[in-house]
Each structure stands twice: as C-alpha cells, then as structure tokens.
Amino acid sequence: MATATPPRTVPPTRSPDRAGTTRPSRTFTPSWSSKAVVTTLLGVVAVYTLMPLSWLLVNATKDNGDLFASPGFALADFSLWTNLADLFTYQDGIFGRWLANSLVYSVVGALASTLVSLLAGYAFATYQWWGKEKLYGLVLLGILVPHTVISLPMYLMASEVGLVNSYWSVLIPGLVNPFGVYLARVFSESYVPGETLEAARIDGASELRTFRSVALPMLSPAFVTVFLFSFTGSWNNFFLPLVMLNDSALYPVGLGLFNWNATLPQEPQLYSFVITGSLVSIVPLAVAFVALQRFWRSGLTAGAVK
Image (cartoon, rainbow, N blue to C red; front, side, top):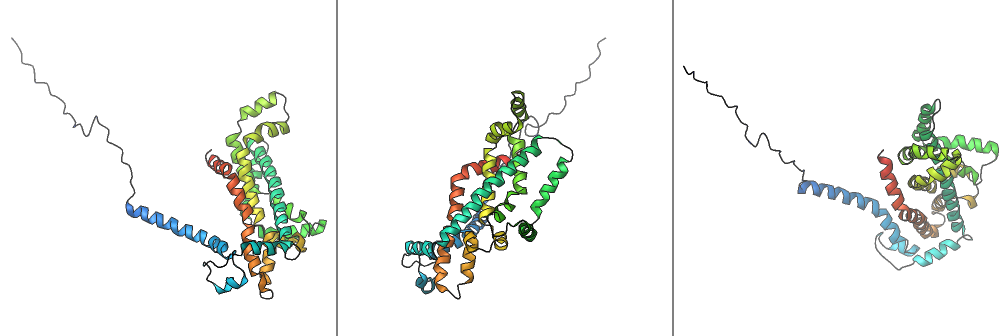
C-alpha cells in the first residue's frame, strides 16, 4: 500500500535587491552652495594675508612726498631704486649691518639649533635609559613657556658671565628648541630603522659615526624642516635682542627698523626707509621658503604619518 509523501516546502527567497547583490557605495558630492562658501572663505583669508604685503610692495616704490599725497594702494612715481640706494647709504650703511647681523643670528643660530635638536631627538628615539620619558615630557613643557617669560632670567644669567651686548647673548639662548626636539624624535622614529643602525654597529661604527654617516642622511627632510622653523623664529626674534643688546651695530634688522619707526615724529624722512627696509627684510625669508619648500613640505607630510 503506497503512502502519500507530504509536499516539500520551499524556503522563501529574498529579492535580489536585498540579498546577493551589493549596493553601490554612495559618494559625497558637495553642493554648489558648500563650494561657494569654502571658496569665499579662502578668498577672504587670501586677501587678508596678501593685503599688507601688497601695500608694502606698492608703497616701497614711493618717495616721502608720494607716501602722503597718494592713496595707499595707488601707484605713483617709481622710486624703488632710489629708496634702496638711500636706505643702504644712510648712517654709513647701518641697515646693511643690521641685515648682516640678522643673517648671522638666523643662519648660524638655526644651524646650531637644528643640529642640537636632531641629536636630542635621535637620542630619545634610539636609546633606552631610566627616566627617558619623564625627561622628554620636561622638554615638551618648554613648548608651553613663552620666550618673553624667560628673557629676563636669561639676561640676568648673561650679565653674570659678561655676555650682554654681544652676539653670543642672542645666539646661545637660541640653541634650545623644544619643538625642534619633538620633530626630530618623530622623524627619527619614522625615518631611521633600528636594523640599519644595528648593522652599522656590527660593522664597527661608533655611535657618533653611525649618526653622522647613517642616520643624518636619512634625516635630511627633518633637518630642513627644523632648520626652517628655527631660521624663521630667529629672524623674527625681537624681544630677546631688545633686552640683550645696547649697541646699535649689533641690532638685527627688526630691532633696527623698530628704532627708526620710534623716531619718525622727529625724523619724518625715515618713513620711506622704514617701508623699504621692511620689504627688504622679508626677502631672505621668502627666498629660504621657496628654495627649500620641496624638502620641508615632504618632511612635514612624512612627519605627520608615523
């Protein structure tokens, strides 16, 4: 006797749009209003940044008469070369001396500061010793201390050892750069493999030779980045030379222009000198950034990704 088999139930199937297919990922396309807002904000920032420089460029081409007789952004008789000649011959060429002093403070100070920062950052990244992280945290605390706060204690210490009113009174305090030490450690951890250093030690290289011949070439982007930060800080340093220096022959260009600007009510012929000198004083910074931008841009990008 045959028995009937019960009907087989078929499980329900999902619709293709819910199972078995992958939904395309949605890409965010900014609307025209968002683009307009961002473009407007960038334009405002660009105008705000470039307007003082544009005013400086225009007014450096005017003589004293045109400075007060014409609007600020209006062109007048081109007198830039005359202004430059008068600027570098005024008071036996004191402005050229100030410019040379700034180059000494900035180039020599930045090179020494960068080397010290790289050595310290390399040591923090490579070696192990008791209390290393605590000491590193103490170094980072120096970033939070404004330079103006420690200028007076440094002046008192410099006066005790007889360094006031000398080049050393400005160069020595600039050797310490906590932010440069931080950058150097980040770069050393990213750029210098421990296996390479160990191979150099196995080959008989000393620690100093390992740093000079192996680690330092790898840290060239870090060197340029820290150097540019130190160079800019030294070039724009104002308060420390104001406290340390009494002889005008030792002034950097910023302090010298400040003194000229303070005497404008008594000597109005210095208006064109102050404006033209301000334009000349930013040329070394612009040249340094343009010449080294390929290195410091890549260095900042690499240092930001560990």
